[in-house]
Image 1 (spheres, chains in turn yellow, green):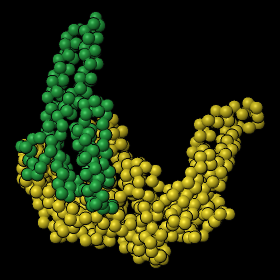
Image 2 (cartoon, helix red, strand yellow):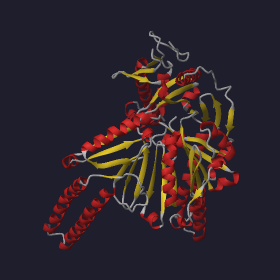
Image 3 (cartoon, chains in turn red, cyan):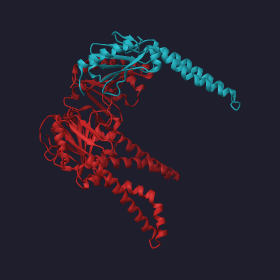
Image 4 (cartoon, one colour):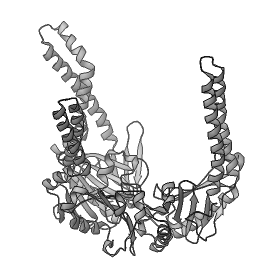
Length: 448
Length: 164
């Protein structure tokens, strides 16, 4: 039988989570517990002083809250211990991952290793202090398609991760974090500058300055609250994204690209080779002088709507900001043979300016032997690429305005994610020809 | 089917059953009944001036006639075509669309019919791929035709299946 990691095992030889995980789980929810205790017990805390007049109200309050939090924490920890006792996982005879869990309702899951999309090691802040980690196994599927192993020691988690990936790939390659070559490391300065120079941020800041000047001139300071929103929100977004993507590093590894980032919570993601469905190079207006680009990707089974919107962007971003040349070389690693240079672009006709007066100059589509590409956007440019082999279907649409101008839009459908490949407002005959041509190329391209 | 569509090709397009028109129109009639009720109620309540009832009635009548006419055109705009290696579905009047689904990319084929559709003897064949945006549905097929289409598609899909 294949052993997973080097941690605790039970009498049947099944792996257990780290014994400190109940405690860690209790600590992670401590802020919530304290908040709860504050809300419920604070009024009664003050009434304590009636029974013990010697205590000052403040001390009494702190005492009551402290005791209540402690009791609740112990309660939560006891619950977690029961959960921990019931949780075990192992590799069965067929070579699949089995996960047993549940106190009241016993549940045994069988995860086909060949279906694994990604195995991530995540370190939330509390776990990092104790050098513990959370292992997340991502499986292709619609709902509830991830298995979370809450709290293993970091070395144990990375070992299990490697074993699972090896089993999934059917190989026995050995690789550790330390010897993976670094492909790209994002300097903090570039990240901060890149986030600040995004079109939305710049526009909101400009608006803020305009409001401030206006308020100063007319001496009507009512606009200040408005300025706080227009100025405060982008600052908050920039700070949050900076913390999330701080120290963004891309490693090369046998099973694809390894991404590691985060200031408070270290994310460790793998972008498996051959799982990337479509790609989008996003270039905001003010990034162009640096020739910077942001790269979003669609991965099958990852970042679909069932996992909530918060995780969506994070899990489908390949690069937050990078030089175009660097981005190209990294993209080539996960999506080989996309030959953008060879593409013969078919641009939207001049009459498209009557439909989209700003972006029409950048509207175009093109294809090569193995991929389809489309461009759109003027202020924030998009370059979307999808390999023929990953194309699910093609469709053409024409609204009333487009019909009046004899235009049509060609959509190349890909799996759910942030990238949607669409060539907008092209000449009808050209779009129609491309539609049937694209269908032919998809059929010839075959599967994977 | 509208042959004036810019997306028209010389393939062998099959229109859907016109029974769907009756089925969809019945839905409109069922929606109209409570609207008529509201108009009568407005007419009878003394506090409401009678011209309001007239306006509601006029709006209801206009949208009823418009929907009646639109349903006929929309249903006739649907057509599908089974080519050697892919399926084509076209639809729409104001917003036209034509989708091409290669048989190899089909994940599953659904055949569904609601109670009204069943009463009129029409079913919908819906083709799913791994992309949520594919939206290739052929409504208004006679059950026998729908079953035959589903079986043919499933067979062709199997022989050309490709993973993700």
